[in-house]
Amino acid sequence: MSYGYTTRIDSLNKKANKFSLGVRLGRVCIKNNVPTSEVASQLGVSRQTVYNWFIGVHEPNDRLSQLIKDFIAEYE
Image (cartoon, rainbow, N blue to C red; front, side, top):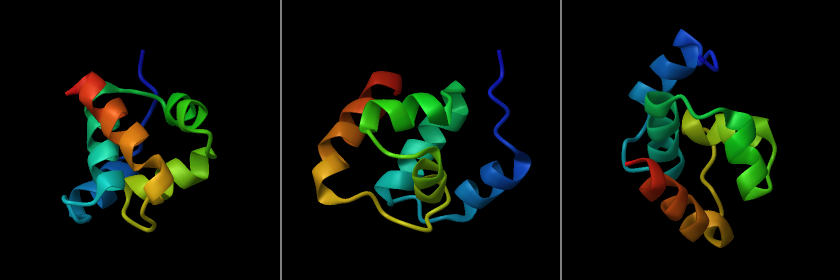
């Protein structure tokens, strides 16, 4: 099943700072086809927030950093 990451999201993610935690999360989710709704639910944020992280518009706050690192570790 595909969760339909658009080519725009994929392209913007690839152009974003690869050292950004949110961008790294995006790369893992796109590669493993993890839906943004699942990420948002597990982290207690909106899907729009997750998309903004994926494309490097915003950075996750410090409170969520360890949760995101754990989430990434599950899929790498």
